[in-house]
Amino acid sequence: MRVSFGVVSPNAARGIAMVRRFVFVAVCSMALTPAGPPLAAAQPNEPHPAAAIAAPLSVAPIPPARPTVTSALLPGHWQLGGAQSVWIPPDKEPRPVENRPAIEGRYVYDWDNGEWLWVPPHYGGK
Image (cartoon, rainbow, N blue to C red; front, side, top):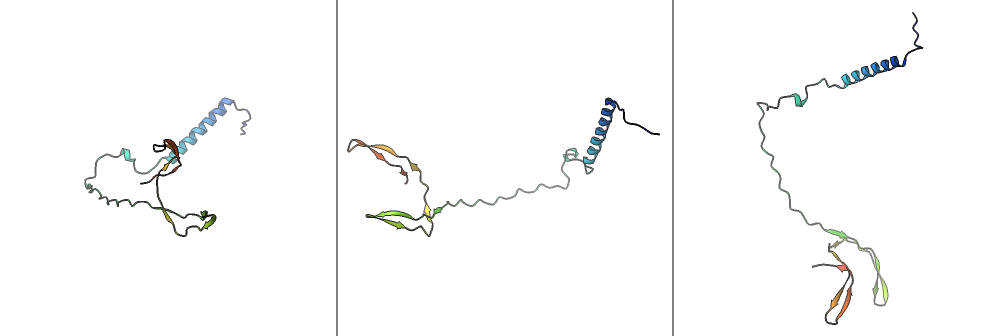
C-alpha cells in the first residue's frame, strides 16, 4: 500500500509538530531528572542521634599592624650651585617618603607691615 503525503492540511501539520515538541520536552525532562537520593529539603530536619556539637574554633590573635613605609628613588636633576648649574645624579638607594597634606597657596596679612603677603603652596608638617 502506498501512502502519499502530498496533501496535508495546515491543522494536521501543526498537530504533528505539537506532538513532536511534547515528546521532545518529555524525553529531555526525564533525562535531566536526578535519579539519586531525595533532595535535602525533603529530609527531616532532626539531628542525628550520634551527632555532637563541636566546640567553637579558637581564633588566632591578629598581629598589630606595622606602619607602612613608602620609599622612592629621586631622578637626577639640575640644580643651581652659585652662578652655575650643577648636575645632581639620581639616587642609588631609596629614601623614605613622608605623607603630609598639601596646603594651597594663600594670602596672609602681615600685621607688622600692614600688607597682604602671598604664601606659595607647600606641604604641611608637624
